[in-house]
Length: 334
Image (cartoon, rainbow, N blue to C red; front, side, top):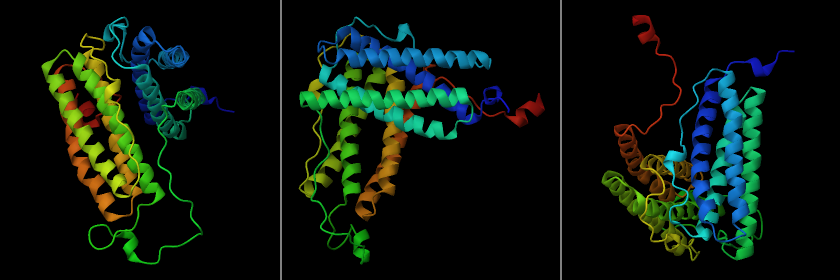
C-alpha cells in the first residue's frame, strides 16, 4: 500500500498549514500576554490551555515544513508582544475572546480537514478541531457558571409542521412582512455578537497602536462595527427580541504598547475576513428580501475596508506572502 505521508503537499494543504501556522503564532503571542495579566484564577487554566495548544501545533507544523523543505513562515514572535505590559482587557472579555476564537478555529479546520489527503496533515487538522471543541466547552462552561454567557434569543416552539404557501414569505420591502425565522434570528444574533466583540477588540488595539495611520484605520473599523451592531440589533428589536450586549466596558484605559502594529493589523484583517464570511452565510440563510439585501449592501463597504487594511500592511512590509501557483509565462521567459 502506498505511504500517503510521502505524497506531495497539495495547494489546499499548503494554504491550510501556512494559515494555521500564522494563526497559532499570533495565538501564542496574545495568550502569553493574557496569561501574564490574568487575575481570575478560573480563567487562568483556559489561557494556559490555549497557549500550550498553540505551541504544540507550531512544533508539529515545523516538523512537516522541514520534512518538505518548505520555508517556515515568520508569523509572529516574541518581538510582536510585550507580555508584562499593563493589561488591556478584562478577564470576562478574555473568556469571550477565546470562545469566539475557538468557533473560528473549528470552522476553518472543518474545511481544511475535508480537503486534506496526507495522514500527517489530516492528523494536525483533527487535532486543531478537537482542541477547538475542547476550548469552546471550557469557555462556555465557565461563562455559564459565572453568568456571563449571552444566549441567543428564545422563540416559541411551533405547534405543527407547516409549508410555505405564498410568495409573501420572501417579501420584505413592501406590504406586510412575515416574522423572521429562527435561522434568520440566529444570523442576526451572531453578527451583532461578533461585531460587538470586534468593536471592543479594535477599541483596545486603537489605544495601544503606535502608528497614526493604524490608529485612524482602527477608529474607522470601530465606527463600522457600531454601524453593523445598530443595523442588526434593530432587526431583532423590531421583532421584540433582545440583542446581545456590548463589550465596550471590558476595555481598560491602557495606552502602553503591548502588541506590534503588524500583529494588530493582521488580527483585525482576520476578523474582517470572518465577518465577510458571516455576511455571506447570512445572505444564503435569509430568504426575506430586506434581510438578504441589507447584508449584500454591506459587503462592498467591508470589502473596501479590508482592502485598505491590506494596503497598509503591504506599505509597511507586514503582509507575509502565501504560497502561490507557478507563473508559467514568467518561467518560459526566463
